[in-house]
Length: 79
Image 1 (cartoon, rainbow, N blue to C red):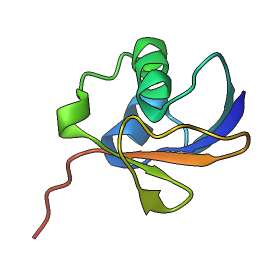
Image 2 (image 1 turned 90 degrees about the horizontal axis):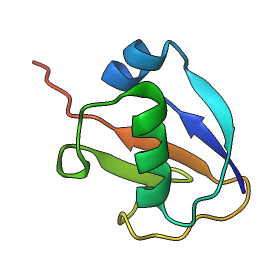
Image 3 (image 1 turned 120 degrees about the horizontal axis):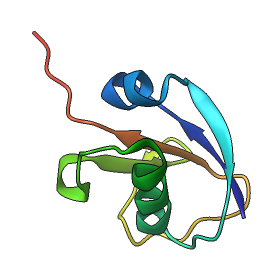
């Protein structure tokens, strides 16, 4: 399956990318996050991160479809 990933904040800093297309063997958002964490050695777990598919927040067990746009939102602090 092929999905598009967009990176923000800490994730963008770690992988040095704004976005990329990712091909792999995954069915759910959680499966994809696990693969991405291994690839880039992200240290934030799923309780610290919020997933979104096609601009909508979703559950970790949401199924992915071909060409979905996936974003993992890290914790953000601001003032």
